[in-house]
Length: 427
Ligand SMILES: NC(=O)c1ccc[n+]([C@@H]2O[C@H](COP(=O)([O-])OP(=O)(O)OC[C@H]3O[C@@H](n4cnc5c(N)ncnc54)[C@H](O)[C@@H]3O)[C@@H](O)[C@H]2O)c1
Image (cartoon, rainbow, N blue to C red; front, side, top):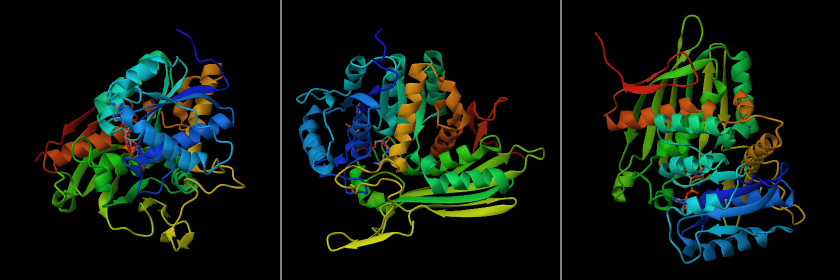
């Protein structure tokens, strides 16, 4: 097979053409905090900066591409100078093909990169296909929905010697990264954590194609803080039991069969001599009112010798305009406002998350690094994120079994759970 054409640049295939990739939802811009999207804008900018070569985009319904192109022209091409929007698209404009990703992956080469932002239940099949073709793969959270699929993905990534990672950009947020370092250096053993993350209830409409059918709000949002815990507690503690509860009413009133909020209560076991216990409570909701932020996101962490609070939604910056009213803004995530006509968001963690992955793929292609080198916590690799998948799957299992606790089992390796089983009450 032909190898990727260069070791200093890579070709990129984006799979998924929706809100996070292009900002295009249905008939136009997403009613969210990212009308210009994140992935395509970042890839065009990386191409402008000579890190990316070919750019491709693959969806299911080719008839959407005319709208997507004009949306990107309006939100990217007309906003920033020197932004080339050239992009190969799959399937063709008249074709609807749920397997277009197979055709698209064949148009790329081993060593190229696939970036997958599609509905949660499609990640596994698309990622397996791209890995089998020797591509490096970055998948949005949740990487997959079951521990068994995660294990298969990790095995195939290892076999093909490619880099497979999860896009969890909060790891690049300076506040979250600093909280992690503090927790690991001087807050002692894990004691307690609560995390909350929300979406406004009008997003139920945006997500109606999959909400309650193929995924839920816990997979969608708890995945962020669950990942922060796994990253922070690596080598310090491991999750051993998950109990989930939900609330209902808002989605049901819109004929959607899904929970409005989901709370996962997770028992973590410290890897100290006494095997002391810590408890984390992760809540996510898509029944929130419209407010000054699109998404509330905050957590409190307590160790045996200290605690820390992070409010990711309120960074001390508010904006009010006649057009859009009052808002708390977070340019640390995506800085969309141009500087002298140029895109200037390269320091934002929404962008850096992708750039770090692209740099790592270039290093692997150049032979200066091996995929497993990034298992040291510098990237969220498929090999170091299995606990997170186990927690999310155990949460879904617990909800489906009327709140029964689920045990996460290990076999010698604290990073890689081997199974999830319903808890058996004794005594
Ligand atoms: N929207 C966000 O803010 C956000 C943020 C981070 C991560 N994500 C994640 O990104 C993923 C997609 O989210 P989104 O908001 O962009 O969704 P979306 O519904 O706006 O878009 C989904 C896209 O996937 C495509 N798709 C579906 N099945 C496909 C297939 N078989 N092959 C190729 N493409 C296929 C659809 O055509 C559509 O373009 C989800 O896993 C979500 O958790 C979203």
